[in-house]
Length: 111
Image 1 (cartoon, rainbow, N blue to C red):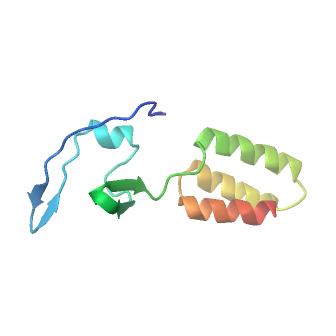
Image 2: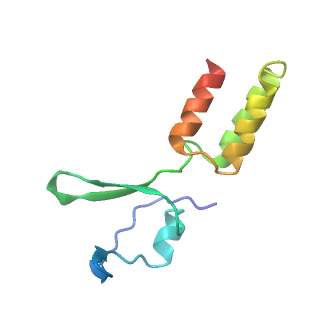
Image 3: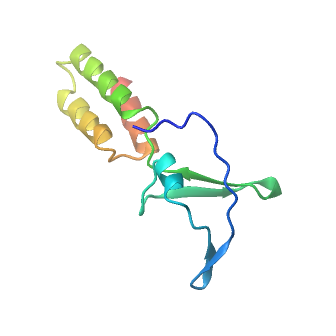
């Protein structure tokens, strides 16, 4: 598992890609950001022209921590909602949920 513990700055050039413009990422950049081809990202343009790119399918917590927390909660509530907790645990571990979906499902189960 990758953990980026410092900020990396790379100067890139806007490139023509067909009729569009884009930035070609070196292989290391998406790997450090845990991105792969086909991943969905949110692109924001801020005042002053700063552009941020944020993955939309990134869990709120690391997968190991999510799985550990889910196991603890499943044990705590073993008589209640076993199927729902198990389903959520498997979905989080598989990275199948977007951040907002994970948050909504966790809130529904703990409330």
